[in-house]
Length: 216
Image (cartoon, rainbow, N blue to C red):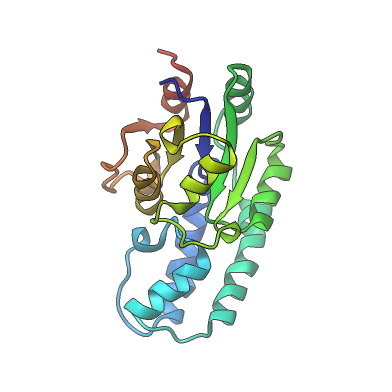
């Protein structure tokens, strides 16, 4: 592919955080913070956690205030990003080789900038051409396309000139609706999900590298 801009989702792509967030959802969000029902993880994975509250409140009812909900997510994030997650195999080399190939590299995430910063600093991911959080835009986050449209605009290109790497159903829908070439990154946590909205599906970091750098 000829696109010179690569936009990486963070959770579930660059770091293996989804397993920890899914455990948090099972232990607290779905067990204690909603009134009734049995949500599936993919309903909320990829969404900004503030928007998750509104989604759950409308669909299932909530037993906590938005402030309590946000505080619980913030507290859980400290261990998730500061202690638990590991970086995608080969990510440092991939970023370096993408830059060497003249491509811009960005993180576009539903996570707040503070969470992204912990990952950037812990794993030395800089320099990056853009770091965009759902908190930075006024429009709705994933699965709406606005965050990827905004990222492309800030980088001075059309969405069609970007490659997006996503793992969640909501994130893939967001990228695909923006018009970007969308790569679904398939690993254990999303192996059973329908990722067919993506233009391309890759299994793990080696296939991702081949797709982004044109390697066989």
